[in-house]
Image (cartoon, rainbow, N blue to C red; front, side, top):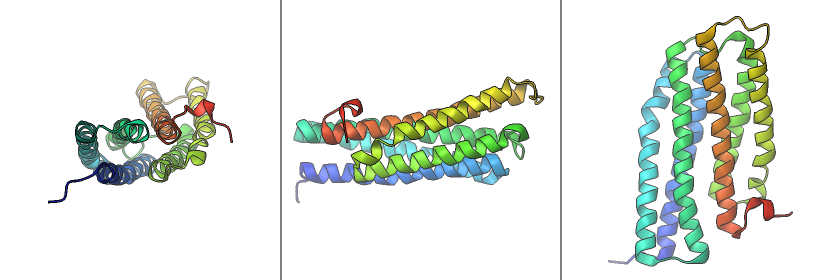
Length: 218
């Protein structure tokens, strides 16, 4: 029986991450649609599939630990293995955040988002979903230049986040406290999803270059 090499294990780890990434981005896209369009069954699908993302993270971690124990990788390969563990954790967290959004969408369906902030959350969902897709592309392709774009994307997300809270604390808010609590949570889940996407691409940058993102110049 052929013994698997370090390169074999690295390729298998990457395959698992490549399977995990689209699961996460699909979860967010479906959760956003469930939230904005009152699609309760779609929200339930997101929640039901979250354990699959958790299982993929566990498989990445187990294989990564096995790879370090058996092959004792150094320098570049070691950075890749450690980055894979951390990226898998961040992808799992992103999946959890999508599930949290879906839970609120299901509980408050069909009007989970107050009309006064609905346009903002539609923009929010588009921006954050695009960041997730870009981060997963970076993870698959290890494109360092593309990874550096996530910081500017995150600034746009933060701007929408601030606008949501400006509306909530403004004179026109008349939705009551329970709606305000859920709106604040939804804003937080969107923001954290974007933050995790940025952090994941920073892991990729370090794995590829051995440098922190701030040290790069293009």
